[in-house]
Image 1 (cartoon, one colour):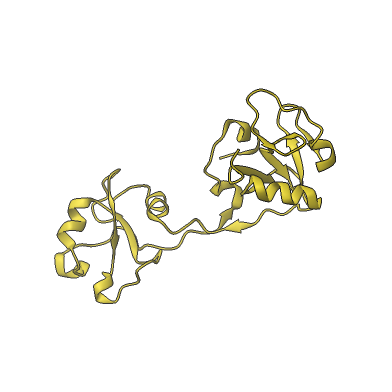
Image 2: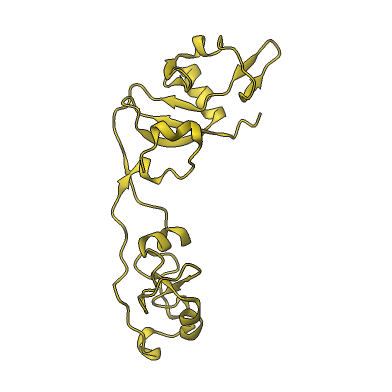
Amino acid sequence: MNLQEKVLVLNRVWQALRIVTVEQAIVDMCRGSVTAIDTETMTPLRWDDWVKLPVKEGDKCIRTVKASIRAPIVVCASSYAGMPKKLPKLSRKGIATRDKKICQYTGQYAPDGTIDHVVPMSRKGARKSWTNMVWCKREINAHKGNRLNEEVGLKLIRQPRAPLPVSASSLIEDNRPEWAPFLFH
């Protein structure tokens, strides 16, 4: 079993917060800061009870010298009720999501589009900035090159901006079947 496998962390009202590794989840269970959720019975269990659970066929487990311990899939931070807000990650996928894969110059859907730097980096434009990057059709971006929009007769449909913060749970992308009851996208 790989200790770097993913574990879903919930707050005390069972809203998804983040993802951690099995290793971190076990450390937190031993400290008493989280309880593991038996996803079959939806029962929260502390470390002392968790290690007594039988390992069933198909369960991922951690083998020790004396026993095998079922790896947690979901844990609950029972003393934390908050729901943090986070900004989506600035990435190609983040820009595509913000712009809905619509070319910001033509208004056409461009599923295989690229990122265009409104002010090219060679012209002192920001390398990574929500306000300097837009989704663009490949051929438009190739035509524009390292020129400014005015130099090639392009006009943005909408000025790019940073997205508003969203609940941390909405940014969890890994949709494992065992996590389905806890993720509401």
